[in-house]
Image (cartoon, rainbow, N blue to C red; front, top):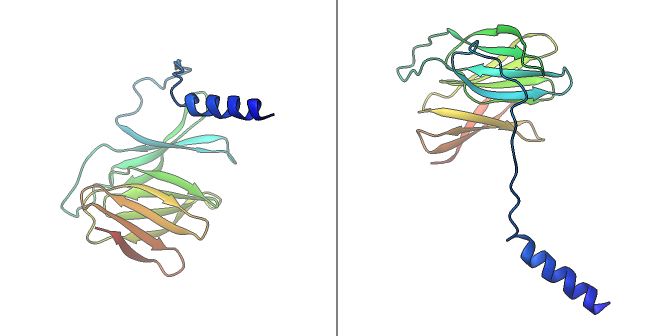
Length: 166
């Protein structure tokens, strides 16, 4: 029994040094339909992908509102390119409880997937270059600010943000 335990321990210790060469193969591509796809998230409930289309960078607080979120099927067919239009340079996106959270240059858009409409917008006035978003089980929204070297937390209940790191 001790020999088996020792053998398992040795295998465990050396397993980190074993190299496995993984091969990635392209299954499909959408072609040249996208101008600048930035992020993608899979909606398991609706069996579609959402893609953020980031085409311009803005730092002056002026909304270009010419970017969008696309809806794509799992075979790469674009269902609707400008599914959620009038966004300002969207980057990171995530889904939580039937809400799609979209990072814009100046804050977060909360999009209700059941009602198919913008539910809320959270403005982050001191943001430099907010980029990615995630949500925890308590419905706190976390946003990275690459340019400002900060992480913001938005509490969905009161819509307030808190600078966590700077």
